[in-house]
Amino acid sequence: MEAEPPAIELRGLVRHFGERTALRKVSVRVPAGATLAVLGRNGAGKSTLLRILATLLRPHAGDVLVFGEPLPGRGFAVRSKIGLLAHEPLLYRELTGRENLEYHARLHNVASERVQQVLEAVAMERRAEEPVRLLSQGMVQRLAICRAVLHRPALLLLDEPRANLDPAASELVEPLIGRPSGCTRVLTSHDPETALAEADLVLALKDGRATFVGPGEELGDRQLRELYG
Image (cartoon, rainbow, N blue to C red):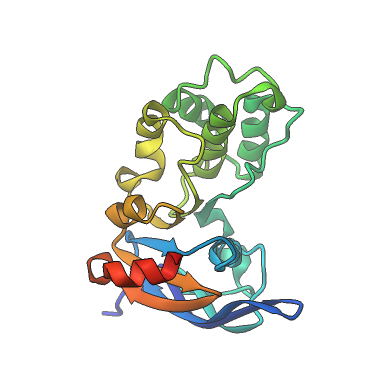
């Protein structure tokens, strides 16, 4: 019987932006259902990695497989399985929260009942009729989380997922984007302590190069200081 492929497999991933190399031969395997925390300072390559996994950027070298499908060539086969929570909320500011979610529901052929379900899950049903531009950053983040999980993805790509959320809101979104979701997760965080608490695996990036790949408990304090120093 064939073993299940990892949810994500990177082999020697390289990505350039002009003369700058954002990712330098990064390799990692993430089993289905596991959480990978990607650590590093601003500019280390974390968001670039998420955008490649989301099929929004093409790698320049190396292999990228998501659920066994090579990217970007077979991106169409996995896009419906991926939910992206990016640094930008990816919402139309002039539309209401509900209109944004209804639009994404149509794109993914999701029933409108699901829109109401996720709005209620994050306690946004009463503010859902207001234009996004009038909402606080925390409310916009909650709507962005709704958009990311609306189609019940198997893989969640989470760039600073709890940014702008107070403790009460963080607790509300936990069933959608935390371990209870049951999804394979790749998350970035400027707060290594929080990320390590959630992670099965850690990928530490410095200047686009992997300085550590493995279980979080094996990442030492000295390595963390060097990473953020």
